[in-house]
Image (tube, rainbow, N blue to C red; front, side):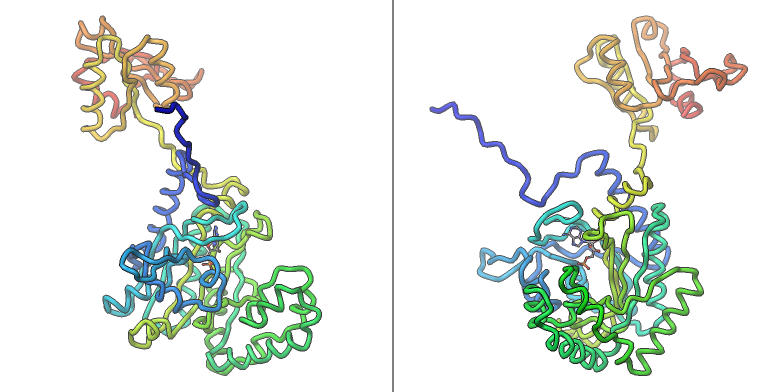
Length: 437
Ligand code: AMP
């Protein structure tokens, strides 16, 4: 027998517990997102957290997310599986598996996992909300999708989010562009950082994304995709730009904005929050893709979507002082000084009536119970002492922060509408509270 203290565990590096009130703020954010996108006909899809490794290899064999950061492992039956690092792959896998009617407009929310170097706004477990649409090749859909993300940021109250917009052209345009970019960087390889050269060997377009100061000058001189656009891709982009103009959504054309995946084509976009540090200011991104459904064994299908980072959006909300989250306090707190049966029965009855009610367990003095009532944030306390019990009544007492301020009480407090402490019949409690709350 040893008396060694039990090991105390902490969360894994880069992972966090989300405690109240942040937890209810997150839920409210997802709820708001659902309202915005469901008003446009998007329906929820919940893909699993684990997929066959191959699902993710399809989307990004050349990206860090898949090659370096993925939590992949061998399952008990020997199959290779992975925790999702993003959601598009699972959505397209689900599309191919279920063959829904087209167009398929879905939204999702949930956790993703990437083995990154954690810092503020960059975690190993983080949440996204997003949409994907499969089966529509129409630039007006690109406008709808971008407008929904914009509507969501606006509904949160964010005012310092900027939309960056680019096109990658068609596949052939993109190939020509990739060749031009590769030739440019290879000619200037000596001026690039070591990491920049490694990226160049793997995925030349990704070098355009480099935030390293050493690479900046070479990146600034790189060719732009507009030089390589086919007429069809140029017309698509014009229609998207015109649509955003028509809807009054401001954007900046950013010819350096490339998404690293081979599947992206035509429209690509990113949202940056100017209230955040530049290194972690991307609060969402998306674009058009194709060939993904085919590569997962489905028919050729156009796709477009975006994913927004919930953790960073909330940091941006903090920085702008918006979206404080809902008031989660209870309506009523029952204070029982007569043995606990009243608290037991009244809280139950109040909840039956659709109100939120809490109490203190284990009884305690009036002072202790009133302290708990104040801490609960409830608007009103229902007190039951010996007098009230005897008379078949209860006392209603407005709580700190909800009590009437001088001059705000109705002139005729005797008429029943007053907000001072008062006694009411226990049988009338629900009706009285309905009037009061
Ligand atoms: P991505 O799938 O990489 O395009 O990311 C989409 C959005 O998810 C980004 O704009 C970020 O807001 C967010 N995001 C990506 N990686 C992380 C991370 N490690 N921690 C927190 N948020 C992230």
